[in-house]
Image (cartoon, rainbow, N blue to C red; front, side, top):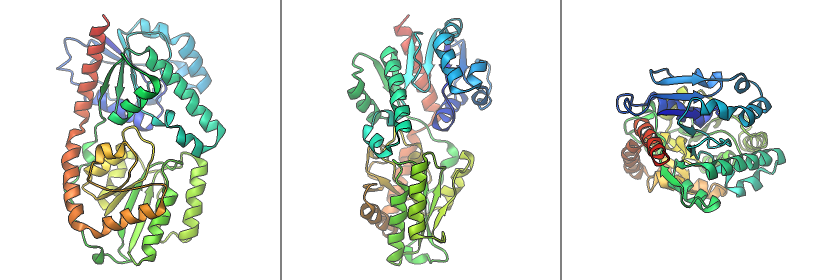
Length: 382
């Protein structure tokens, strides 16, 4: 069996991490008699990120390394012929392959395509149209798919209700978490052991977008400082939507014009983020639109107490081991952060539970379950 992986629309972020990890952890011995080759179709930039192994073949085309129009025209006119000549099954890593090749397996990664309330917050027509077009592509892809992989139970239920995928073969296969994020349980100190010269360090790792709510977190931190608690906030992540970046900058200027306790580090390389987790005393995750929140899982692996958005699917993964808040309500965020800094004994037990829970999220398991599912779909459609 020759498995094709359509990664032609992968640019970076979670998509490239997912692809790299399932291939890096591919069990060649287990599949030596049933998988002949794995052919990845992608831009040269993406292919350069993937480690070579015996069964792997990397394929690119000039159109994949040019602009969007060139890539889309090739996908619509010539791509299927290339896939047909090489593959017995195709996995669409971004869940947006719109050709006619079968059997096809799609992956659901982006809940922004479905949660329309976020579109109302974004307001920018160009961005909303982009989401709508990508939704239409995924809708067509999933309708044509013989199997669909979801990365959270929440996404499976939500998208099934939206698209009516009754009769499709589906599977929930969670992402893994890199071992470098795993840390031993931290010794959590009393807030009285911190000073304004040596403050309690909160971090929030996430791109800046409307559904990430960094500005509300900034104001909640300022309120806690005003009560006499020595805390500071470290923001890590690039601005992925300009109006959200402007909103964050405005809030920061209003509460901390000299950047004394709001430290915005901007983009940090993925392989350097774990050091910020190690240096933190508390973690904040305020997103209200996720499929499987990798940042939250990495936070759980760090042994650090967590204050988190109460929006699903966050509770699916964090369970009862964090302090929940409404990301739209500054007072709710403030209350959760106060509980976190004042409840050291709870923090110890929650962090221990998170370290146990996160053991379930292994890229080895993700890779094996993914290829098992691909074989199942192939055998069902012989």
